[in-house]
Length: 138
Image (cartoon, rainbow, N blue to C red; front, side):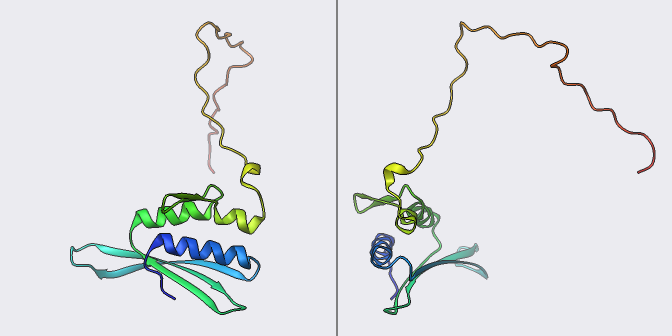
């Protein structure tokens, strides 16, 4: 079944993976078209296919838009995405059978060292020595 809306495709794929994760496959195909579109730009097409072999259920989604691809890539990851105003868990959490709270969170970037701490000067043994080039034939 060809699905035209990305939110509907993500919802259907999530339901299929929850029902039968071991028999469901998800494939991504990238095609670069040599034929130019009306505006003179080559189009790249990305196709997503979710297939469940036992019942013969197949969902297809095709896009050339980078925002739709980005949303679907986020839906595949553990953090998930927002579908129709509701945050859904990532599809990889369903496949790995892990709770969202168990996923390691990203580390916050560390700010510079506090201003009151003074840097210790390097000793001569800690300084890096330049590498000497070898002369001669190689």
